[in-house]
Length: 529
Image (cartoon, rainbow, N blue to C red; front, side, top):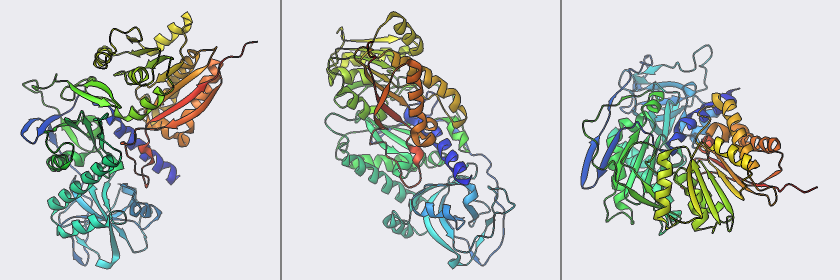
């Protein structure tokens, strides 16, 4: 039961965070570059976090607070790299102040004494000590940020076992929280840069990618996308990120300036937040009405992925803000099967699957469908950017994809390759059953559109962590199989992949980081009697 509940908590966190895949309309925006800083920020207020109790003990508490976790099997996972500490894992907190404040940097220790507590107590109830037990009763296992109003009570940013050198640097800060936080941010951002350089990012044909991916890069709640080598878009989904905003901006600016590709150019930093997600994390953010529209809100930034160019609007708000760089490798991969094929790109957004199929794959014809007029306008602009406008081989249609497919089934239109990449239909585990019915209907009709004479390929996707993670990923695949049965067709799974490699994951304790599934199926032809 404990394992099941823990898994549900993990999935719930990622369903909140994975929405950072797209930029959100109602957000605070900050433009920053080494030569220019313009701020359009929201006012924020910290919730009244509760005092965690008090007691006395033998020695003075450290100036940087400590969170002491129980000595259990779960605490072993923290030592091995799990970044999330839930309330039930905590034995007590200690610090010089009457309580540990929201966003505070904390040392995470494991209680070396045999755990006798917890029975008959609420899972989130634990005492706070202004003086600490004897020095030998606990062991420092890492450093993180504290949130008394969230189920993710501590997000560990540095683990002693996996980053001993950073632990030594933090020790040299001598309980100076600002210096220690700056040290952590510098180390993590430098590591993220090195990881992308190992992936050959950026490259001559790709200048748009995920630079920081939350838990995958040891910075839970923080994501950063680089667009066109000109703009870094920060996506904040945790209270600590908002509280330490200035430190993060300074560290990110310094890290980018050291990058060999960006050292001689100014990279703007755009800060985006979603008040609803921050509220879920125990942080209240209230948006102010801006007196003036940002000067650069309509500026287009040209981004390049695998040699395909896209228009993005990182300074603006609304759906036309950026690109989904998590599908970069899947788009390129599918294109290799598209030569002389008729391709259907459902929920095409900015036309990524269509344009890759045409420019890289040599498709005979591509049709992209999306319900958003903004998306269709952007697709057509992108086709022009790539020298495809005016060609009979590509078209973009504004329509509801469910209605579009029903119309094409009725008139007998068939396709050789279909990409189905709908928006998140299951925002949480609670909505999974309803979402499954929608996924089933969409996949059933997509399978019906595959040529009965020759068969074809279906790449079907879900960006819902609840769907991707259920039953170890089998739930989504089984749904596609059931959809095929409903369509009266036979399917074979060829490959299952996830987000692009720049969307790093933490293998130690965050499996729900795998929010995206892209499953490639062969749909068999219908044999003639």
